[in-house]
Image 1 (cartoon, rainbow, N blue to C red):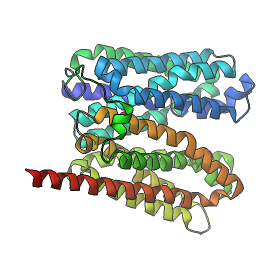
Image 2 (image 1 turned 90 degrees about the horizontal axis):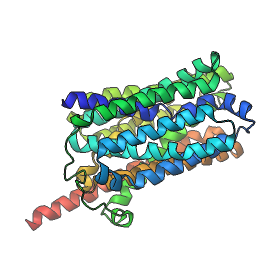
Image 3 (image 1 turned 90 degrees about the vertical axis):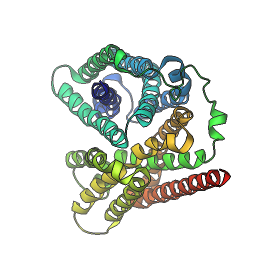
Image 4 (image 1 turned 180 degrees about the horizontal axis):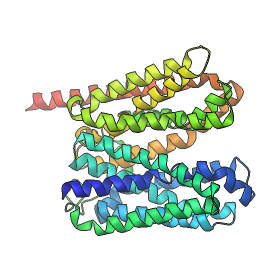
Length: 393
């Protein structure tokens, strides 16, 4: 039963990744038909991100009241409805309106499933959970590309993804008997931790800054890889676009492999190893050599290094802040992640426009240093707490 439930959770996380790269892969066709400027995609993305922040912060309250299964089913249903709505939208403003339920659905399911795995499963399952997000994010551009190449156009891409999402919603609803009864950790009707109370937890700001910096590094690498190859390595558009998938390949493969060693190495050590590997990748990007092979290696290595960091930070949350507080903390972590992915890549865009995209390795390196320092300070803080507790006994 536990293995069957885990399979359902993995499929649910594919549903989280499916819509994430759909807008970017279809926007070139969408904007022409809708008469929207190229930059208008940023407005839709920001509305989606705002919804995810709100629902992430509300995840503790919702999960305690409804349970993880119900929150997951409703969230996936919201995104399914939003994808179907996108397929019928006839104006940019209607897309903006539909983006609201899309964002609200994405945040809650992310926080709820991350917390459920952190509480009930081993570290390897957290790595593999996020590997399945990568599967969804990799598949959706191919769905959109095939739809645009065919007769249905970008609307067909959205409608097909919506049907998949509706099917996953039904699967989650049917799996309700498999889910464990709500435990005290999940809430069981207990009082949700307020945002101010969550932010007052000792060490929580360290993990939030670390999570923000990681998400900024990841999102900037994903969104600007193609432009780096085009602008800095002077590659043609089609080849640059193809090479933009290198980060996704690295992070998905890395999460698959890290799951096999996560329990042996532990969350803290894997975060350190991941940070070291990211540093190697950044150095490769910064090397002033001819050709673009070193840049290919750089993005693959950065993605591979990023692979264990996000899952390990999430999985260690119950141990660092208590199982009773983990849903609230993970919800705020998700919110900080979405804030970083919304604002930091555009910030780098401004830097790239006026100073040059060549500064991308330096930009990534700054966030890596902060990520590593905050993570180590958190480890030191928790060791000190443990020592004090042992001495008190």
